[in-house]
Amino acid sequence: MSYNNLRQGSSKIGGRRPISTGRRWILKHSGFALPLENVPLAKEGYLPAGIPLVCNESDHTAVPLKVAQVKKVSGKVVSIELSGEFSQHPFLVGENIIKMGATLETSGTAAEIESVSTSEDGAYTELTLSSTITGLAVDDYVMLAKKDGSTYGKPNAILAFDLYKDEDAVAVFANAAIKLTDGEIYERRIPAMPELVKTALRENGCEFTFSQSL
Image 1: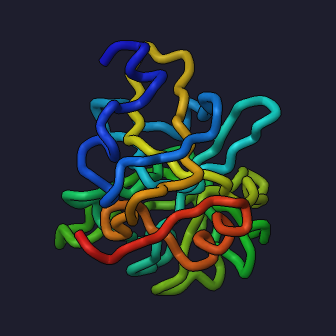
Image 2 (image 1 turned 180 degrees about the horizontal axis):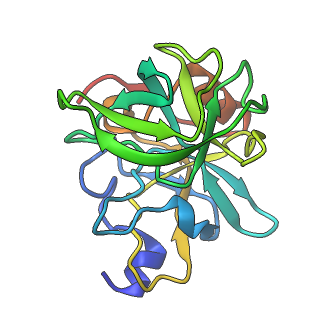
């Protein structure tokens, strides 16, 4: 993949798979630089289209609002949905996560992801953490956070295309979408999108309609 392609993201709507019934995306006006440590190397995966972004328009940076629903908890091992045909879990070793609170600004006690693997039965992705997360239970959500447990704020866009990083990348830029004017987003083909996140997007002027269709 060329550096120009890396800067612009994939030219195919949704990247590896369609994530919507429509093609008329309205984007924020400039590319937003994402932290290199939050984007997988292309040989290891990609940051999936449909993930919410917390964009700072003053300095043109953005952080992906990584979220996953908990399927099992066993001490420091938290199981989330396995990467599948249509989407993949977004978390990487070295990132910090907290239990999602009542708001997207609610801080928590952060735990660092020390390893990411597939469960023995092949059903889940297992995040092995540096410490347990108090009170975390099945059906809760975990989310990306800063090392001190504070959050990155409310999302104000979503990633319109899958995003890859090559080994020589010095920067990774995202196309941030705020509207889809002619269709619905396939919710089953994007990372977890709890109601709290959908509400935050709407409150920040993002107009998306979600569908359970495939």
